[in-house]
Length: 379
Image (cartoon, rainbow, N blue to C red; front, side, top):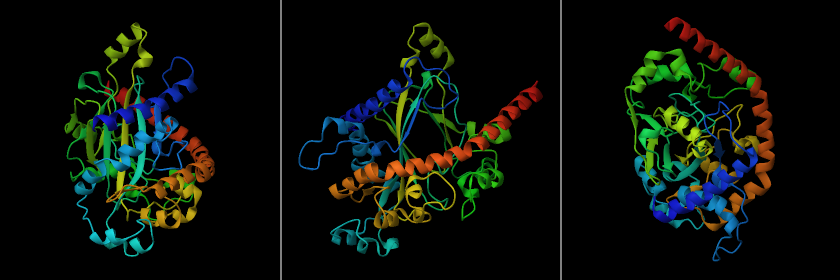
């Protein structure tokens, strides 16, 4: 990232992290959560947007402006479009309004890129991590036939020596045995086309043992992923681009570092921030059935729609970013989502999340029992 973009991203993320610190009030304890902060939709953070696009944005809008500038208006979408072999169609230039129905009457001839999901992640000293995985619908809300690229952006320096960073299993998106892992973990590729009816249907009929659990169910495949592991020495502003189907995982902080920080009374300062942006073509399709996707919580008719269709028939839940970044009208549309639609959609999602909790609790117990059994058998 350029120095300006990184500086703004640092400011926006610092504001959100400080708000989270104020909420927890005091020293953080081990929670069994992978991240201290997992802020989905960071660029949908509520701001006092200035109605005059020619005037400077208010200081409060820094809570989201750093995310929006990086995700939507930087060179990152251009790089992603090239990685996806997308072609610029000059006919798009003839459109007075990039969001108009006329522009997307024939979506197959109008290649464009949209931001599918953005997440601010903050790793702390908690040792829990999600094992080797590809993102499920919570983090990648598109059908398995929809391609995509993740741009993983380091906001802090993340040397290999400290841990707390990111591991990739290089080439794992093409190995022939990846399909076996999809089945064992219940990847999106195993979901029925119509989705699941409710939480009970999802947990009783979903294949596999869960997104993060390949090590528990097949240590051989886990070791094969480990053999391809690559961890980078990252500087703030470095970006990793990878396909949605590349297996990856978080690296916990080194235990010796945690002990040293704890001895010095600096444990609460041990946090590495990263901003991850998932991109997909405008013709990528949202999943059907039971879930927690906010655009669908707001309007059930968005199930199965393409990202372009959602923008045309509802709102810019998935903002455009290539070949054009959002215009002022679309930015206003984002603000309307925040003010008018997100509150209702968030309440609807909470209902679905609460319905899943008993099943998640039972799954967690089963996984802990499996870990104990594995440990007993290894003696």
